[in-house]
Length: 410
View: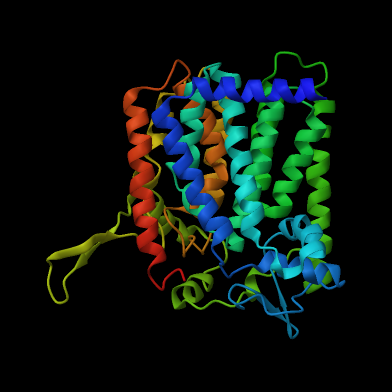
């Protein structure tokens, strides 16, 4: 036993010796910030731990006020949570042991670390380059929109962290042993967390179809889609028990406090009319200027983020490299198609993603943009990429602090 522990220690020390000193300090700063925000801060908006408490009591609605009724679905005098139930299921053991004293941020911090490791392993399998994989993983976690949802353990962001975790697990399994039933289970878990993540299945179906060996084509497809079908059936049953309608997750009954969202929803939860605004915030919107009252003279902090979203080119500039990805590779084609289809589904949604930094819904397909990024930089990351990653990290963190200091988030 002592010999095995010694090998682990030696492995850790050997990895640390290979890490560039500046990178190590940036990584330490980044995870220290996540620890501070996830573990040391006491944020509200902890709906999933309250829902876990309800599940333990045999109820599907909140039996205790989760800090705010915002975004809950009011139906027949009960308040329900319209988001997928899986994060609450994950929290049941913690709620049972520690009650409501257990904060979502505790688990979120651990998942952020695991997601970093999963990203590193994915990049390592493609590049076989230790430092490049570390820099690419750093860029995803700290130099993109992911940073904000990683920092703030609100329920909406907590669900996205869990969804990202299962998507990364499925990609890593595909790059490794390719146990398609296990991949299907991971996709089912992500779907039970965020329904739109069911689109992840597209990537794996494309890869199965394009595989040179078609011997087990039908079997692999069945193994992939069976867990996903089960997840849909579970969601239908969950919806029926709550709203007597298998297709009603509760979004139509949500309590909204922003008049813009009310008016947006009048056009439908999903409608082509919502696409231009989503495109604007995803690609074009920049920060707003801060001016002295009654003037156009800039004053500290000079700029502030728009809580409705900002351009991916500003908040996640590392993904500029994805346009260099070699489209001759089947995995690159599959990642591109999956990203575009998932994006198309998001663009028609009425909510846009208000109370966010950047355009957080794009994080749903960031793991596939990461594949494109890794293939683009397969031969190594440049000094410019490293500098841009660090500058983006500092810039994003600066604007996030400004955002958190306003009442638009708190």
